[in-house]
Image (cartoon, rainbow, N blue to C red; front, side):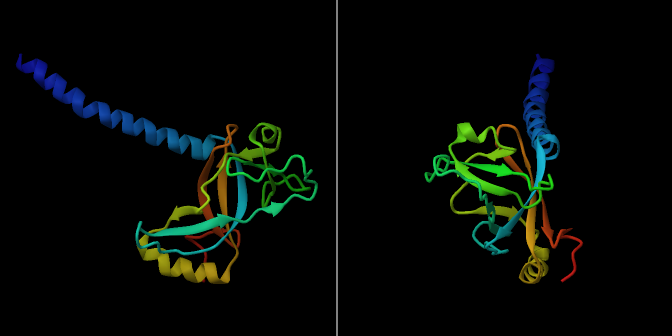
Length: 169
């Protein structure tokens, strides 16, 4: 009987740890191998959101596609973003069109609807002041992974094309 209780205790401790480990592994896989990597410029900085920790608050700054048909455009909150590669075939600073999600699946990549209030990227508290100086002087962009299902995962913050951790103010 004593052995039965100890096995249940071990299982009760290990099961949540295994599930948590699997969720973390899935998140890393999705971020690193779950789709194509795009570099998108960002704007609207506030490196220290004191109510919810230290985050860089931003919005993506997409270039508007010039060949957008008025029938394809969408103005509601449930619109997807249709991303197009540049003329040289790169995924750096893509052009984007808001459109209904079903036709957007035919694009080079599409992004499911995002929060209206903006995005957040975690910054360690000790780096917030240095990053604020970098953001005032440099051009910021974010590398993201966009999967086939339209989900976007953040990878790295770049300042003037360099990782923010190694950039100099």
